Length: 218
Image 1 (cartoon, rainbow, N blue to C red):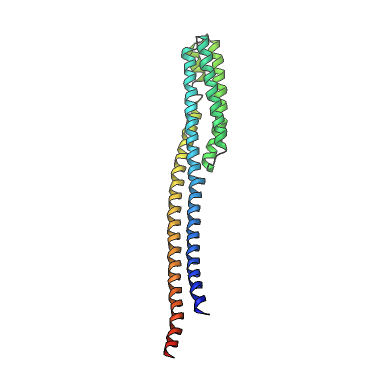
Image 2 (cartoon, rainbow, N blue to C red; image 1 turned 120 degrees about the vertical axis):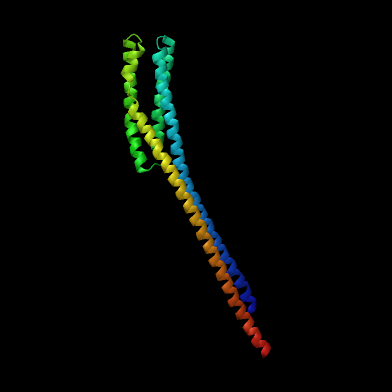
C-alpha cells in the first residue's frame, strides 16, 4: 500500500477507536443516569408521597378532634366534619396514586394492608359521628366511639414510611456503586483504546520507516 494511503488510514483508524471508546463511555454514563432516574428518584417520589398522605391523615384526625371539641355549634360541626371528610378522601386518593408508583414487594404488601384499613377507619369515624350527635354532642361519647380505630392505620403508615426510607437509602447506594463501576469500566476502555492506538502507531511507523531505510541503502 502506498504511503499516501497508509497515513490517512492510520489516522482514521486511531480516531475511529477513540470515537468508539467515547461512545462506550457515554453509553455507560447514560445507563447510570437511567438507574438514578428510574430507581432512586422513583423511590424518593414514593417516600415523599407517603409523607404527604400521612400528613393528610393526621390532619383528618385533628379535624375529628375539632368536631368533638367545637361540634356543639352547628356551623362549627359542619365545618370541621366536612374538613375531616375532605382529608380522608385526600388520603384515599393519595393511596391510589401511590399504587401506581414503583415499589418493592415488601412496601407494596404494606400498602395493600393500608388500602384495606383506611376505608374501615373512615366508616368508623362516620359511625362515631352519628353516635356523637345521638349523645347530644357529648365529646366523651364521640371520643369513646372512635377510640383506637385509627391505630392500625397509623402503624401501617409508619411501617410503610420506614420501608420506603430504607429502600431509598439502598437504591441510592446501588446507584452510586453502579456509577463508580461505570466510570471505572469507561476509563479502562479508554486506556485500552489508547494502548491499541499506540501499538498501531508503532507498527505503522515500522511499516513506513523500514522500507524507507531499505530504499536509502539501495
